[in-house]
Image 1: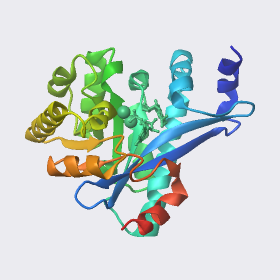
Image 2 (image 1 turned 180 degrees about the horizontal axis):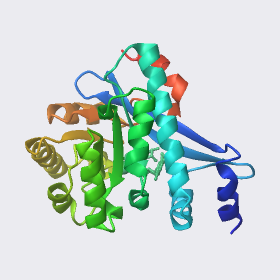
Image 3 (image 1 turned 90 degrees about the horizontal axis):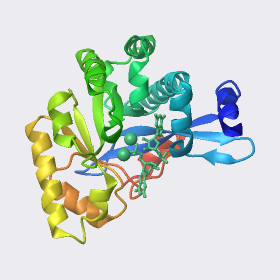
Image 4 (image 1 turned 30 degrees about the vertical axis):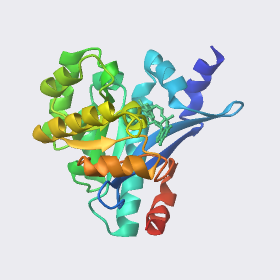
Length: 254
Ligand code: G
Ligand code: G
Ligand code: MN
Ligand code: NA
């Protein structure tokens, strides 16, 4: 109960921090973009992961203003990377709870935040977890609205839900993110490799980009590269870092 009332004040007290985990090309490990990951620095409890407070934020409706803050901060970060590196192809991805898709002004807000910074819509990706898709019709309408505006929508945790393939037909995604559980068993289980290869081929045949998450070792990188996976994310490359640390991290990559 205490946490709930604390969360109400967290935005104005500036207790949120947005960290960024790099995404790299599977071909050569070069920096391509980053996923924004939210942290709440509670004055007494310290850093709290979103697994814990996002549900709270969804139930209280606070996810709307928090989500808007996340989008603005993520675009600020991307803007600073473009200036510092001159790389205009970098993208930034933010996570969206399905609850945020009922935020009436969301699409308009995103478009305005992009225009204010003179950023093309293609630099922003919205990650939506398939297991949370509760109102498919409503979600489909918002997702196609984003797609029409050129903003990319990513199906997060792909392969973990009951309706993965149905979602691919129903929604205008531009990217799928293979769940970490598949990446974990790449080295030990040959039937998992067959499955991952099939998912990558199917996604490509639907013109979807494929990202693997939770890549921790070179051997996983090797398998994913040989299977044609496009982008990789995970501790093999970097943990989530403060925005200003990414250009320096990229310079230190081989
Ligand atoms: O790194 P990690 O513990 O941060 O992330 C835990 C989960 O919280 C992830 O599944 C991620 O999708 C979710 N998450 C991280 N940041 C955000 C955010 O800004 N908004 C929402 N809705 N979910 C987030
Ligand atoms: O939104 P999503 O479910 O993709 O959130 C990613 C989550 O996975 C975050 O909690 C992030 O900290 C975590 N994560 C990212 N890379 C790795 C990794 O290589 N290994 C493990 N165990 N967790 C990771
Ligand atoms: Mn995600
Ligand atoms: Na995920």
